[in-house]
Image 1 (cartoon, rainbow, N blue to C red):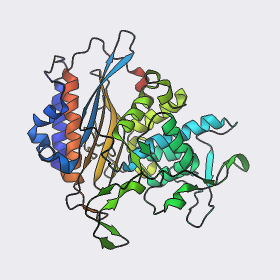
Image 2: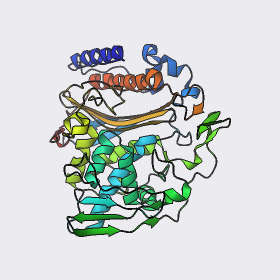
Image 3: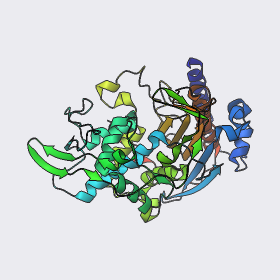
Amino acid sequence: MQHLLRVLVLSLSTLLSLAGCQQNNGWDGSLENLLLSQPERFSTVMQDVEKYRPQIIYTQIDRDENNKPTFRSYSYRLDSSQYFYPASTVKLPTAALALEKLNRLDVPGLTRDTTMLTGVATDTQTPASEDPTSPTGLPTIASYIRKVLLVSDNDAFNRLYEFVGQKDLNESLRHKGYQNSRIFHRLEVARNFESNRMTNPVVFVEGDYVVYEQDAQVSDADYEADAAILLGRAEIVDGELLERPKDFAVNNEFALQDLHDVVQALIFPDDVAQERRFDLNDDDYQFLYRNMSGYPGESGIGAYSDAAKYPQGYVKFLMVGGSAPTIPDNIRIFNKPGDAYGFMTDCAYVVDYENGVEFLLAATLYTNDNEIFNDDNYEYDEIALPFLRDLGLAIYELELKRERQFHPELSRLQIERF
């Protein structure tokens, strides 16, 4: 791992020294050719793409004289019918929809910083009445979103899921045009289909005053896939090895194109179709940007102050491999990754303020050599993280050399830090 970190630091330093060479890089527009041209980085995956199931979307961004962006996307093996488990990537749209719901409710005194107490309506549910990472020690929508984006906390996602509600979450995404997505279960905790349809009662309070109360909800919709999605050869369930494929029809889905488009809609709300946008205000966006691009150690949250446990590259897979101790000051990565069952995914808006570089990049990869699920034996460190790191660096290399008629003005995204 230390060798990988040294490679990363040297790679970034070398790339930054090339920033003045904004010349045509000769790239032919094929991501496949780009990957094949760099076997030292990508040969393992490119020699067996059927096994590793990579999908990639790269979007170039160009500005006009008024700083208005236009987008041009390139893809490799993009296929919404080829399932991958989205893991924690589903937390990003859920966080945005939680903020959107607050705006839609429009209750006086109800904000993302209002204390949110979660109760129970069934014996499978769990309550939440404190949050040591919150400034007040009490849970709020804001504290849950911070944890979701800074360290990808699963319980925080579950609380946002319970607030938004299963049906509202999915119908909102479909209404916005994200048709190849379904988010219908909590993460990390074992819940059956019926339990995930049922979400907890929630009350928002200021001291002893009830600001807003939401009863337990039951979704009347069925979000399972229409057909079985069978992957692998075996699965461990309750300690027992079951020699049969795992059916992902009962798991969340978030197609790479939808993930890419959600990030694009959040970063560029004025430049996507109206129906794709989230109903957020400027302060909401700044809050999301601060936490999407922020590092755990700069958040002021004591639990995240250990730099060895939470380096700057934590939950930053593209370009920095998930563990870089530091990232150059002029670079920020606005992203949401996820990994589980051998699938590793990340989608990011990458910006280099100093050199006027910006791009969108989304990618997913499958690394489960023995084809057994739930054995915790996945090739994340050996294959997935190096691939995503090097993919981000390869695209960044292109961007450093790419000609631009107008230098982007990026002050909107140079946000005030924590």
